Every structure is written in C-alpha cells, then in structure tokens.
Length: 63
Image 1 (tube, rainbow, N blue to C red):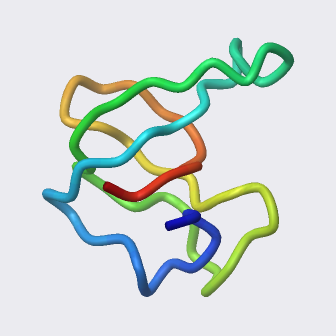
Image 2: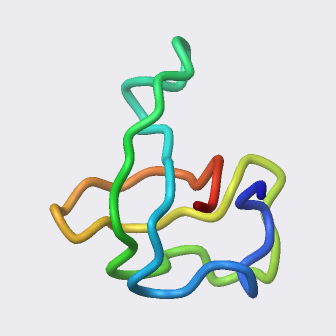
C-alpha cells in the first residue's frame, strides 16, 4: 500500500520510507513508525514520519 494518506499510517506500523538524501536514487529504508510529522490528511509524495531509530522520511510503502 502507498503511504499518501495519513489515516492509513499508525505509530508502531512497519513501513518503507525514502530519506531526504535518498530522494534522487529512491533507495528505501525500512523501520517502525514512531511519530507522524505531516499534519495534512494526504500528501502526493508520501506522509512524513519519524522512525523509532530517529530517521525521518516520506512513507512509500506500508507493510
């Protein structure tokens, strides 16, 4: 599932995100959502989240 809708993402969920530094390559980083940082209900590039390890990026896939 894509990560464009805020309602689909919950803390504790496993997701794949793209970090700012990886936006050109599109490399994905897997982790567990700690905080949802995007306030709007949807975002075309993915909802921005903070993972439990502190990395911040936009959700591309929800597992």
